Image (cartoon, rainbow, N blue to C red; front, side, top):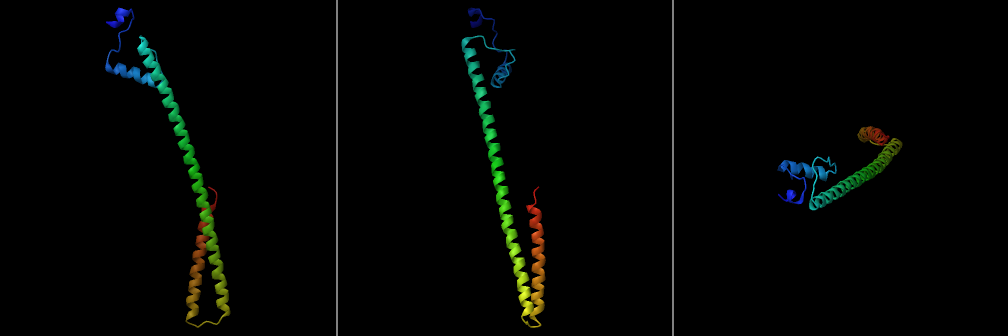
Length: 145
């Protein structure tokens, strides 16, 4: 064989799984040393694969960290947008509650018909109850976690 002609003590890979073992160990840059190339071409290929493995692993780690940072940034932006929307909604409900109170005060000053007064009272009571519940919900949602 070629190894004996060159005076090298190589037997080559014993089987296809043995060559997979060598490839995996080289690509993961572990290199146990139980199997290693003897020829210049084999060493060049193994060195090339080792460098490729290091580059592949470093690029994978970089991409992973960039994606994690982007996800965190996006989540923080969404949390801030949600908080701003909740504050705006709370302001709107506060305004509605105030408007209902003013309307009730004005309605009590104006003489209304007997039939219209219970309807206005019912609307005001339901509206005030809804506003109070919504304000409580929004206050709970706006509290820091």
